[in-house]
Length: 587
Image 1 (cartoon, rainbow, N blue to C red):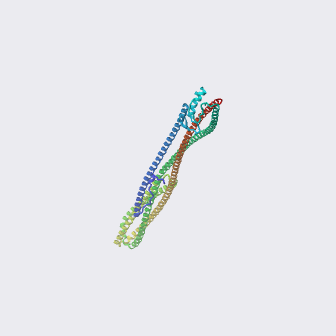
Image 2: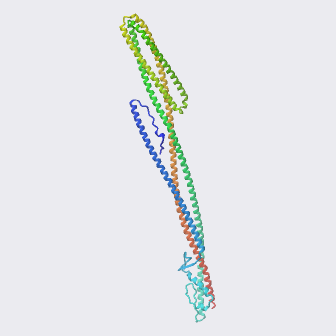
């Protein structure tokens, strides 16, 4: 996207060539139309650029709002996660307190055993039922002080685990011994089976303890992993915040540079416009001066042609004077009048010479000013306005000089016409006074003198024309100098335009860098969101695994406690059974 220049630089008029004649007028009209079209196009481009700028600002605001919303969501997520951790910690503390405060109760339900009714553990099929063991143990304390006969005669519900205790028969001592030996063998077998089950239970208990320790270690590892992940997430958030702040600072610095470059372009734009206007005015002045020079050259050529005609007329007049010797008497009467006219002409010539001297002084002053201007060429860039004013003043002086020259030429033409009229009058007088030849001889001498004076005046006029030609050459030189100055100004304008293009390229590069930074910020934000989601999913999975492992750990602890209680109960039962069997054996 190319940077469009807004402000004063957008209304810089293009450089136009001066028009010539009707075609020049049509070209001026077409150039004006083109300039109007270009201005309209520039205004439309400015409106489009303003719309694009507004749209970009809206997009940037939306991005900032999204970033703020995402930031709030992250904060909410972190707050919820902390609350969940607090709740879990509080629940674990409550469970620990409840476990410390509650009394353990062994509950039986068929082939299942539980502590306090929380978790139920299924016993193996060969294991004796717990209620019977508990009831037998409670009944054993009551039976210790009773007699053997009452104990033998006491009827009770016998189970698989219980020792068969038959009443004494009347058949004799042999049957009693058999029964006792059978009971002892059964009790020994059951004790062996119970010891095997105890060993298996102890092995299982050790395995469960190992599993509990491993699960604890895993839980600790998981907690460490969770802590490391949370610390990493915090570090990543801090790094991302720092990166975003750095990117925002870079963006601000780039925007400041863009604004500085835009201000510089806006500051340079009026100077470019002024210089282009100066170039256009210099071209127009040059064109006007060239027109005036052409007109002056044409006037000079016309005057030269008239002078040639006058010379031819004078030669013809000389021939006619030789013929008009008879008209001398009448001419003597008119000599006085002619002398007055000659005095008037001389006064006019003196005035013209004074004017020419004034013009020469003005020209010298102009030359002095031109020398001063040549000395001040190094300061042309700083004093363009003063140079333009001086050029305008010189142009006015030139126009004034040309107007004076034109008036002089008109006066000369009028004098030539008056001289022609006088010649016609003289011809008429000579035709009327052909008889007076002696007077005409004197008149011829006077006329010859007058012709000599006229020739001298013509030579003086030629000299003045040469001076005018020199002045015109000097003016042409000045115009060439102005043309060179306009070329230098155009070169400076080209340099300024090149600087403007380089500044625009730099601005485009800066905008590209800003876009790349925005894209990198967006990509980093996307990566950060994906990592947050992945971390959240991992944390949830780890939490679920930790909860499952904690539940398994609690179950294993309860099972181990139940097994320990069962193992604590079983040796007492077996010892009581062995004591009873030892008492029954001697009888």
